[in-house]
Length: 121
Image (cartoon, rainbow, N blue to C red; front, side, top):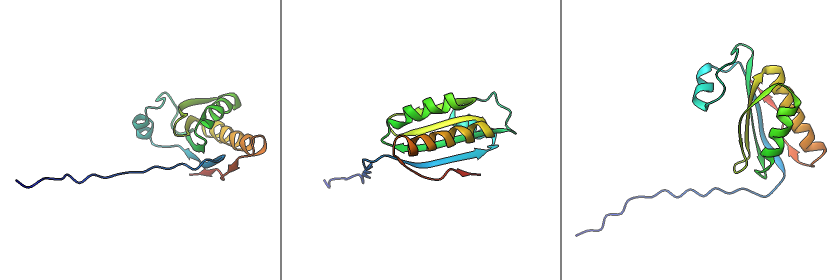
């Protein structure tokens, strides 16, 4: 009887120790389905709303970033993951943009992080 081998895929994920914000993006007026699929607050005026998403290392930095975000304006903390370094916030476009700007500024000027530019669409 011949041996059967199932093909297995091996995924290796590496993070390099460093202090950086690698991704910061503001999605203006996203479709309501995006909120629903991400499990975010559906009680929003979608015409003026935005989703802000960031990724940073070390991943625990997301805790600091979430604190800055909620203190910087009227934003809703949708998701903060201290294991992957992902932060998602929602609110009005101006508030989300201000929160991401404040996070990037603080991390660059006070914590000495390498930061990316904030992109918008």
